[in-house]
Amino acid sequence: MKKLKKILCTVLASGLLLTGCAQNTSSTDSGSDTVSDSSSQSSTDQGTDSNPQDTDTKEDINIYIEGDKFMLQGEEVWLTGMNAPWQAWDDFGGSYDPEYWSDVFSMMHEDGFNSCRIWINCSGNNGVEIDEDGYVSGATAEHWEDLDSLFALAAENEIYVMATLMSFDHFKDSNWKHTRWREMLKDTEKIDSYVENYIIPFCKRYDDNDYVWSIDLINEPDWVFENAECGQISWDNIGDYFARACAAIHENTDDMLVTIGFAIIKYNSPKYEGDFGSDEFLKSRYDNENAYIDFTSVHYYDWQAAWFSCPFVVSAEEFGIDMTKPRVIGECSHTGIKALKQIKPIEDCYEWAYNNGWNGVLAWTDRDLLNGDGVPQYACVKLAGQRMQAILDGTYIPEAESADIA
Image 1 (tube, rainbow, N blue to C red):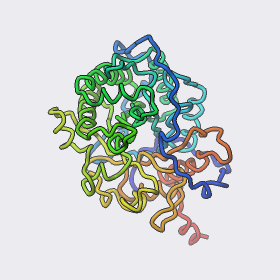
Image 2: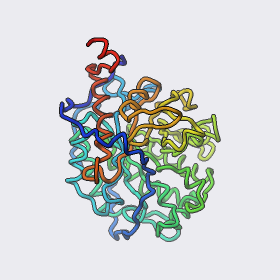
Image 3: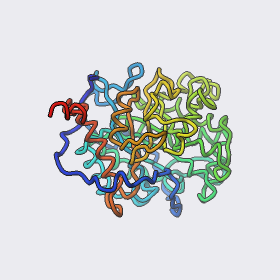
């Protein structure tokens, strides 16, 4: 068994809400159920002077990379993660509820999770200040204050946050600021305004909080390129943003990592239609040695299997992922898979990924995380956290071996 740093707490030996998990087959399309009603706040506080948080003073609690592995305090760490993307949509600078997020992080910690992907901006309608021409001047004071609180709570509960800065939703026709974001993405000077007035202040503000361990530049840029409702913006324009943002993050933080949450493997594997997160592509869009992502983030739902197979059936290497860097499955259904004549509950998917060349999995949970109707999605996802906790601390016995022992 791999030697891994155990940063998870003891799993509670309590009964689990199993009923209904296998029957719930509806996969969540992140961002498909959106709300866009908040207007931008007027006050701006970029927060570049100092980090307002008194975060953990322990040394070397940041996740870093050696070769193709994530490391923590000299030992390999596997990302047992999940998506808790938002509570009410556009939370930060909107309707942020610290008690909700405190409960989320505490619950995750108790159930064996060490990492979480959160959408810092869902639609771009509030929080970040962008004018009609696509120029970004900063962010509202409320946005920074909410993030200060969120990331402090994550640190208290030892949950490492992948901060997703924007989504394809920013560019959708239904988003009332979509023309502004499209203007931004098509003009390198406007991209620079976003990088200089939002991404760099974000980096400087949270660089000292090691639990803000990575930035996901955008949720599923594939749809910005493919879908008419998102503008069908070229990969060259999208790549201009990727490259400039990557360089800025590497140049303005000590150890914060960066990735891109692609929706479909065909856009981040050379096996299909090109790797638009590759070093070669990013440096072709911006001649800077720091224009690169640190690890690959693949999204998967069962509709993709017929065309591009499934990362819970095919190893990372067979999937065509860059094996020189760590690779995670950044989104997948909370139910596991039912494709390619394979049926695996989510806990089996995590275990399979662990054994087949992936460095972590972050399953999707929707806004019913705490109080959804019927069986909450989290009742299924928590089984994966608990399974991985047992694997990592050496107490897990597979069913076949357990039967032999009996």
